[in-house]
Image (tube, rainbow, N blue to C red; front, side, top):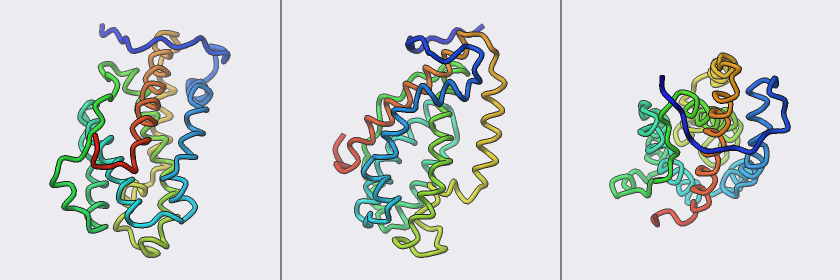
Length: 205
């Protein structure tokens, strides 16, 4: 049997009987709130971001999602959307040069820690649909080019999110397994937040 070891987490005030989704929500609430205030995402939401800064934001996200998909042994779908968006903005040549990549992706060696990491990814994609709608002024109303990533490739991400929640609900009630899911999400959020702090200095590792 595979043994998952990631990081220790502080005991939660949430009862062990609480749904895992609720435990994840409470544990990551603070960092989730901070991500809403990230200047790049906030500028997209407020429709004040320009093409140059939007390109920087997408490049920074590309530098995160490509190594994440590699570490998680996933097809490069989201990084592919980002590459398409960057090209649509006329900056595809920047991908020919080495784009800074996150080197701190958490170890995702067992199903529970990977599931925790995916909670961050799938939740971010769900929130991205709102950002996609805010890009009409910058990219043109009804134009998908430049916002494939935030639009999840045009898929019904609400349906995908519900399928992911079914996976969470299927996690056994054993404390060790639940804690590994929470630890995976906590570690992933920490790395994601730190990486996005450098979005305006794209071009520097």
